[in-house]
Length: 212
Image 1 (cartoon, rainbow, N blue to C red):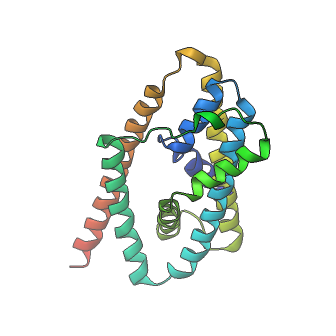
Image 2: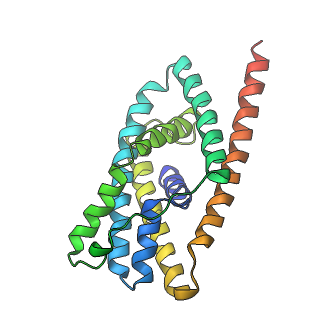
């Protein structure tokens, strides 16, 4: 059950940074197309579950090797640091919607759109492999079929919960809502990633000094 809760937390928090999917959801919600916004989000959440499942089950079989374990931990530090710098100081993505397609009907269309937008970014798989390395490398969840499955399912719940939160925020604020607010949250999230990477780096440094 802990794996499920951890999955929810990770899924929720890591979906906050601004990206094309978040912006697409915001744009739909601002135009009062709440159902379409949520369908885009849930389509993305399904892809998160699939990618996360592939990652944690694959990583779980490799992480028992001490050398690969160290590689995953070092890679985790590097990726978190680079992503933290990019998120905090880099240029954030813009929304890319075709105006003519904004209000076309068809609920299934928006669910598939969420999946397609997710699938178009190959870095998501690398991201979930990194997350799999973290949760297994640091023994946050057990390397069992049940824990892996619960963790992957939890990430989907967490991602979906964020999109419901995002739509609710837009619904409450309406015209007062600005994309700039999400951007500020994203910058803050980048700082958190940098702090986490600092702790990971310090842990690796202590381990290195202990084995000298």
